Length: 274
Ligand code: NAD
Image 1 (cartoon, rainbow, N blue to C red):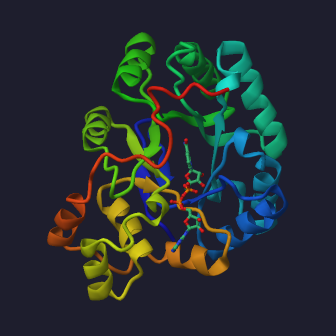
Image 2 (tube, rainbow, N blue to C red):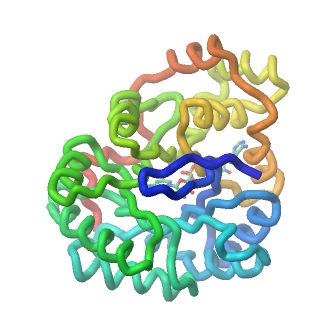
């Protein structure tokens, strides 16, 4: 099965999982059950994806014991603030049909709204009451991380951020390492922007792997948890086969040169969409 990383709260997170963004609600249960039966053990969802019912149904359909599946969901921007966030998390649990999630994240900081600190306090409450075993954030940058840690004394277990070879986020990852925060990479394949890049192609030729596998392996070797999305069984299988090869130091260094700070998604400093 997939490897795990240690969280700063003493728990473990699978290093590889699969994501449910843009997975149609009608096929989410089947996709989730298929992925779990294939060997995935982490399923990344969010209230805003509109498919939490299928996420929960897929977990039950997989036949796996609940404690063998690491379930993530996220509090959406419009639900920030202490009371709203508690209610939003409870509503997510109802849709999932679960009494707790393994990881609950604040989806975006929305700095202009200035509610992420109160929202973080709500997540601490939800952790203390057992509704989330671990808590973390997503799309937070260093100033917001500093603030929630400084104000509450509770360090997020995870920060889920956009990372791919064109956007490597080395400074933020170094901050995470100093604070024991696990980095989790979203849009890890970067919309295929680096599939044709020479260092990726060269590593793919040497290892007999696909460009997508080389890039996902790069995430594994920088120490991140990674959550690619595919609704095709062949794609899910391809993205699972990351632990039977290793990129060399030279290949890792060559891929590091592809960084150009270019995002696929929005800039978290500016994004405040409800
Ligand atoms: P991704 O990088 O996983 O890419 C998905 C796209 O790549 C799909 O079009 C898929 O068909 C294709 N693909 C998948 N495997 C492939 C392969 N082996 N070869 C070629 N193409 C392949 O992108 P994503 O879905 O944007 O991100 C992954 C997950 O991260 C999401 O599903 C979601 O769970 C999470 N996410 C979180 C945030 C956030 O703000 N926290 C934002 C975006 C995504």
